[in-house]
Image (cartoon, rainbow, N blue to C red; front, side):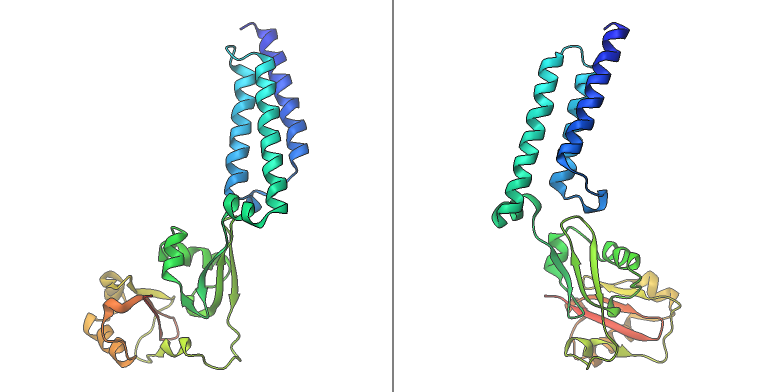
Length: 228
């Protein structure tokens, strides 16, 4: 491919992509759904192919870009007008924490583990699961968090938060995850498995295997979320 031809193809691809992206509309990266993300990558790949792949004619490259943009715009309009299409394309938000309880099944549907959930919560300045009333995993991949109001009456779910004056941690620390004790963290806290089992039984829970997640908070309280 001659240099002048490459320059011409690059210019055509650049200005065509610029025009098409303006038509498609702008959206922040954090607001993009999975469909938007994949469509954007595909559009970029088509533009690159038009610019540097001599086996693809300029005409066919432009047709590919325009048709792909047309399909994307059409899906976007259907997404706005049809609830079913919106669910099919973007999925639905998932409630990961409800009334202070971790929703184990929804967490698995979102393909998140407990550590990833805690990392997302920390981005919202929630350093303990017990601080959260609701957490919703949006279709954009962002986590919306509603913290508990401390003046609310104690609910049945919150009765699983036990005060343990003898234990202390500078930060909230995981002690049980998916029915298994975290022995490394217990060692750091100078706690034993027997001690944890005793606290679990005092909370009215017969076995550690029934606990999905438990963490020792910095004020000495033990937050417990049961398996579904």
